[in-house]
Length: 543
Image 1 (cartoon, rainbow, N blue to C red):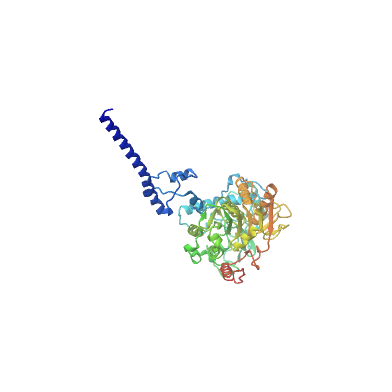
Image 2 (spheres, rainbow, N blue to C red):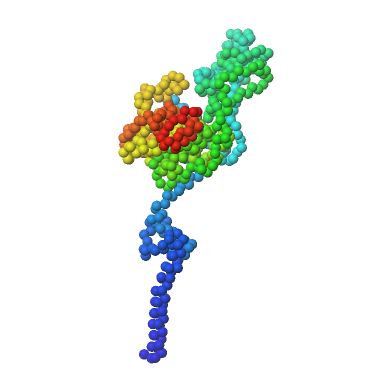
């Protein structure tokens, strides 16, 4: 080998050694100057093992650029698992969907009446909600088309109001033309079908220039008008109407009012002024939902105009540490009101506090059961709750006591807890009468009183599934409906443990209560203050 070749080989060997030396020194420099920056920013030590176990493809995406550690920081898998992730629920609208297409409007089945009402209420609610979303400024009671009588008696097959026909045939005291011919003509018109309106020579059931007494009264189903003691007309309440909405009477036309006597005329409902009751402070906002299951979800039934009641609950038992820490979740469930200005304020309240779920149908007492179905749907699909509680907005709840009562029951056992009624019979007469068509059996199934009861998530999931498949029977008494659903679950799935306790008080407040019913906003605050100061439950007697 020539000298030049030997020198060439020596140079190459020297260059190879230098390369190996530089490579060996470069790796520690990268670890020292690169990864230490990440550790100082987020983790403290910067000491990592040479191998990672990536838990998911998502973890891989977080770590695929180690050569630019400042731009793409590393995440330690064990720390990601221990974080309590927050879920953001942006919509204030319930995801409960009522499919009215399957409702048979011609059926006379006892349970079909409430389905027909629900279909109509959801259709009206959909329209109202759409207008709210479009930020329309129309306010006031939406009365729809006017109802009036024109002198002819309603058909015998037409719907009645509290047993009264909507329109009577007008008869004046001084009318002397009650001949057989006029009666025969009237009956002929009834049989053939009237084509023309009544002659304006006989427009009203009273005489000109003559005193008369008009009486307006309200019943269970609508208003009734009498003239000189004789029934003239009745008309039903609009969907979503409440008697508190009737705060005045207006008379128009060529009528001279001599005197007015009013008895039990309701004054303006105090909750119609939400600015007087809502404390728009961040401290009352609902804590966020966590991406994990919760021990208990509490759904509170409320009316749209009950601003004071909801605010009192926010300031009292919703301040319990179990709720503030999101281990227990509470939400109000509210349907739409007939007054659009109330709905506007309700939507603002829901968006600010984050604790109101709006079920998009026009509110009606007979349809309260739909709010209960919405509570089950939210508890199962949104809150991921192990147990679901339903209560009213005049119910004070001792959250810790309810949790303790639930924990007494064997884990993974289906439960139904509350003040349970056994062998109760339907009332066939009176204000709360239930017809045999509505409930043909002599006894109700065992059911817990509505102001406060708890069911397990398995039962709630069954209810939601039955509702989605259009197999859930709806009854106008919400608490009886729940008893009916639990009984069906009990006979078709694993057994349910019924737990009866009088401490879920139905008639007010009792010693050592779990829930107390009929509590005013003032009493709510008082009971919460006593619970905090004395460390034990105590009733408040003021209203």
